[in-house]
Amino acid sequence: MSTTVLQRHLFGPGPCNPYPEATAALGLPLLGHLDPAFIARMDRVGDGLRTLWGTKNTRTLPLSATGSAGMEAAFVNTINPGDVAVIAINGLFGERMCEVASRVGAEVVRVDHEYGTPIDAERVAAAHPNPTVIAGVHAETSTGVVSDIAALGAIKGDALLIVDAVTSIGGMPVLADEWGIDIGYAGTQKCIGVAPGLAPFTISDRAFERRVQKPQSWYLDLGLLGGYATGASGGGRTYHHTAPVAMVTSLEAGIDRILAEGLDAVTTRHQEAGKLLQDGLEAMGLELFATEGYRLPQLTTVKVPEGTDSAKVRGYLLERFNIEIGGGVGQYANTVWRIGLMGPNANPTSVALILAALKEAIDKA
Ligand SMILES: *Cc1c(COP(=O)(O)O)cnc(C)c1O
Image (cartoon, rainbow, N blue to C red; front, side):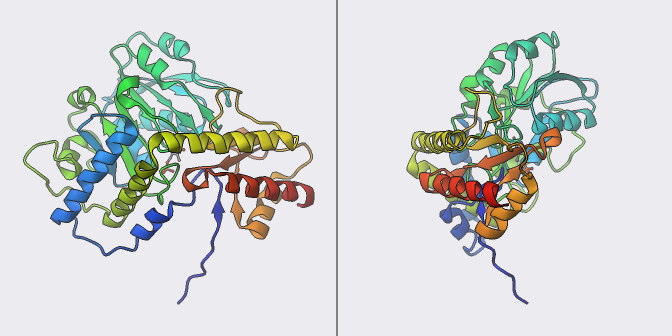
């Protein structure tokens, strides 16, 4: 049996094309999950993630599941039935937070924002006098918008601040401690430039001390996970579940790649590529979707021109150029495209390729 190898240019909202170092690491020999060499690797990954998160939190680890599991872990460990969760919604992932929080019994207080606009911290503050948690998405991949998380940290009061940094981490600064993030979760397949499958996660001591004592999820119970990846429970490493050894090894390589380039340089590379793409799209006469001043460089949302069939253009890009871009979300499914420039794709060559291909696709599809 053979597998057809398709080499795509993944310019969608995720996964992106991984850094070559991360792909190569997937082919390394496996280690046992309790092998001292693997435990040392997990320690290195924890250190690297602390740097990416901008945190000193001991409990910083890659959860063994995708970004959405990070979201589940955040709520299942903080919400007892009836607790109030104030959730800022400005896209699909804020919506998903509401669903997850309500399933663990939260009284969800929604703060809805128009899609394409950033979170308004004052409206979030006014929504409830003493919530248990406040939650919001740093980089809304569904709309291409960045929100000011420090502003949420400033108004959180006694609440715990839960932040989705799935699309921001590894592409723009995330300063968990400085901004007052109590729980942050991310993914590997966006700007970290590693295949999907892990959820880089961080939780402050303050949040850990207040955690739910017997959360509904055994797998995502942070009280049990302490000894799995961080040794933070004391008494050394314990078996909780079998670590996804290959994925952790790949994540280590991805983090090493980012830190070797330097976080500032990586941020600048994403900013410059995003600006180049957004300027280029406007020069083609296209209109950007996200509010000016709050546009993510790593994920650009652009309106499908009047009279153009969105699906046909995307199909043309895939067939002729092996390029994947994303469609819009919800009511914008057919009227917005989402173009990612994440990780290794954040470079001028990729921008030139996508601009030229999109122009041809719009003309000919
Ligand atoms: C991709 C994404 C998620 C979900 O991550 P999965 O790895 O698909 O589970 C959550 N939040 C945001 C902002 C994302 O971009």
